[in-house]
Length: 377
Figure 1 (cartoon, rainbow, N blue to C red):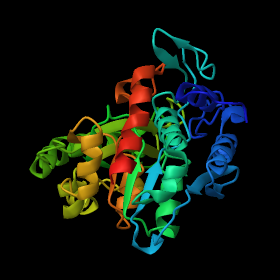
Figure 2: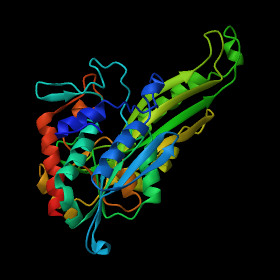
Figure 3: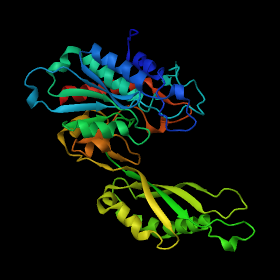
Figure 4: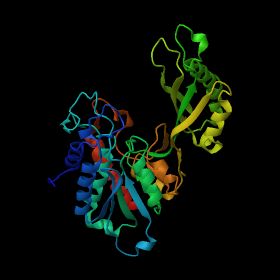
């Protein structure tokens, strides 16, 4: 491994390793997958004395799990996770070299600088600075680099299922050192309308699936959307509904017999507890051959903000406990009983942008943030 003298060196090295999530159709296959990045992190963790495993979730797409050494009666020590994700969104449309890690004007530029190789670098460098003192902390620390967070979170889902015995998790996300203890969940619904094909010159002989779908979407917009207001959260606000995709038909002179739409619902904890799919079913049109299928689900995060670990983490950072409209790996860990939050340096406003960047001062503050948290647990 190249000698690293500062946390900025580490972040540059992480940025230089392409780890694009292969979800987007325009992604270049050679740039996709977390394997090389996970292997780099594994090597760094081994240098700290960690017991490391690469747990393959999908072909060439592993989680990296590194448990740091601990002395004393480990059976009484709480087990803490530091968990950023190693994948990034696509580099298509970026206005900078996505993998150069260029430093200028007090910022480091590149895909993942903010989301979330910056938090990964800050976490890893905090462990590096703690050195041998890690073993004598009051907690046992495991670093987990998750794969796949940018689409469906298979890495954290698999980890939560197979490694549920932890006492607290800090998921690395750019939160300006606020502690995000609650965030909305999501449910993607695909609506399918079926009809009957016919010649475009004789549309009365067919059943137009596009019209059926359009009427159903209008019905949901005028009935379900207002019903969401009753599940408003005082921290997160109101659940939302976004009709993001619609497809149908083959060509203009054929009555379409199939049409689909995809809707992104963002759920508050109150709506999740009520049962969103039940509410959706109540508002679906009963005629028109419309079928609703859930194609992606992520539960909201709603960790108790008064816990001792959150108090310690908040004091190490901005002092703020807050919510977020986005979702992350924390929800999947919380779902199996691991109290989880998201917290890290940088702003979500820089994530996924054409010139993604992170302030060097924020990066350095992130190192101190994680280090102080671990020292004072």
